[in-house]
Structure formats: structure tokens, C-alpha cells
Image (tube, rainbow, N blue to C red; front, side, top):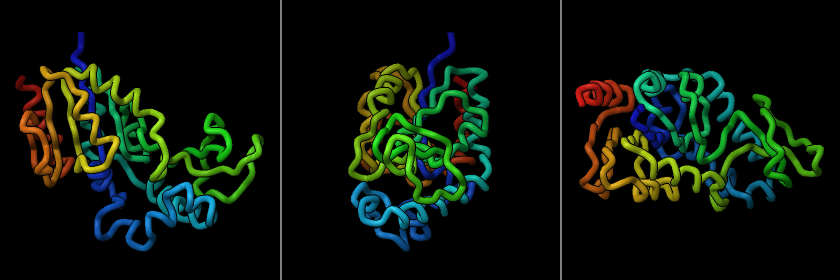
Length: 226
């Protein structure tokens, strides 16, 4: 039976594909306050602005390509039962070939009805403010700040099953995703790959302080030595 490798990925892995991160100095948040584009209140106040903001991000994602880190994770499915929990809203893991990806914060390639969270469809590259058959408006299928994270319980279940838990490209500062670390089994192997390893990280983690692509090369080398 294959060991279960559960991966928690963050913005750092997609940054190397040219997708700007929320919190970097050159990130897309720079020209917009979070409250203006990524909250339920922003949607109520100015849905057109919110749609325009995510149209820019969606275009960026559609034109990006998976990088070596994405490809190496997909390749590990040949040796491990790999489950990816991603904080990212892009589909680069899937395009790289990963088959089991849980999008904790939603998917920018999809849209859902503002009145019915079960009414989900594929989004156009450029969304307009349009009504849905169920009486709401199409909004990005994104978990905004201040909203519940519907897939959190499933993410916790996967984390609890992990024989190996790998964190890649995230500072572990954004909750509730960062809380998943607390649900790992005591005996599971724990790794983190990031350009800057957070100081608050538990000492049980083995660390590779490198960008995602370089770090994944090193991680795969070490993993195959175990």
C-alpha cells in the first residue's frame, strides 16, 4: 500500500509560474484594499469592481503554466497516495497532472450563484454581472475574507490521515489553513519548503529553505532516500 502524502500548498508555488501573490509588494492587492475586492461587503457595495478585479486575476491564471514544482508533485503519484490541499485558486496543480486536489479557498476558473452555493459553473475568462437561473448573480467561486471555509473539515480529515505532511510555498500565517498543522499525526513525517521558513514553525518539521522549484527537487531527492 502506498504511503499517503498530503500536501498543503500556498502562493509561493504559483508565484514561480508568474502568478502574483496577495501579500507581496508587487501583488495585486497593492492597488486595491482587501475590503474593496475580496469580502462579501465589497460584493454588495460594488460587484462590478469585484468582477473586474477577478477578471484580471483569471486572465493571469489562464495564461500561466505549471512549473517544475507542480510537475514534481504530480509525478509523485507514481510512488505515493498524494492528496493536495491548496490555498491557491488557480488550477496549475490539475494542469500539471495531479488528480486529487482540494481547493480550500475556491477556484477562479469557476463561478457560483450568489444565492445558491450549490449552483456552480465554469467561468468565462471575463465575467460580467449577470443573473443566474436561481435568482442571484454569478460571482467568483472564491472564499472571501469573512466567509466560512466549506472544505475545511475535509482538509482536516486528509491531514489526519497523512503519513507524510508537506507544506510548500506558504508562510502558515493565514487561518484557518495554517491550523491544519495541528491535526497531523504525531508519528507522521513533516516537511516545509519555503523561501523563508516561519519562526513560529514547530521544531518537528524538517525544513528546506528554498523557492518551490528548487526546494521540490531537493525534497524529492531526500524522499527517495528514505
